[in-house]
Image (cartoon, rainbow, N blue to C red; front, side, top):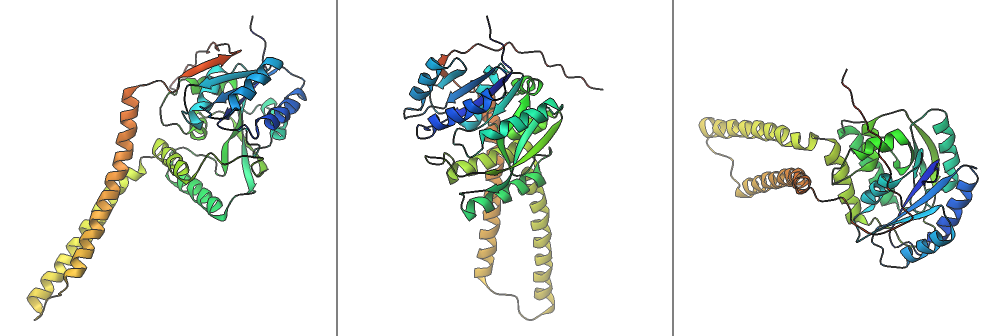
Length: 324
């Protein structure tokens, strides 16, 4: 018989043995303070340390702890997706284990949810312990995404949020491979609101998002929610064609009406290199979209589980869409 669950907390983890015990204790204190039944659903994303071992120990002692163990590292966004697939709660909270996002904010999210909001996301008013470069690039990315995306995605937000059961059920129907979860939550709609907070320094361990992963993640966000980069080729084509036509008229005028023509192979080569660089950049943008189409056509599963501990498969509610 399934245990009634009011709240599910999804915690994706990857090599977090230095912080996982503190994370478990703080989450447990916060969720016990609600006075309602809950589950802590940890998703081990192919950790190479003792993270899974610690969680298995929690699960043996605490009936509220559950574990999904991936066969390898599939990525943070896929881990969140797996948590949504198996979450049983009426409200689902997504939070990382590094404690940069404070678990103590969860009761405020629950209050907003009980007021009728179906998505409550945490908006960062300050980011402690991060370099100026990281802060600047993050701010630039969110503004760029806001300008390009067809859907309004709140700036300065991560995946730390609460979503209603209806939102979670709607997310089940979205199975694209290169996922940008915070964008998908905005795309499905429903009543959404924000809670501001100060993002703390990482409690222990190292960041799991180096520059290379951040760039890839940014590309997933932009290509998943905007076709405008593809339109860039058309716009640049018109601009370059117009500039070339003007330059041709100037060259012909000099040839016909003056005694000398403009010399300089170096300027010609520089122009050619510039145009070739633009063409290669555009090919790269097109290649990103084609690569994502290729991933979708293979239709491989989003993740593979090595082990499930105390997991019950959630029975999905049918989500019906109607066009007025």
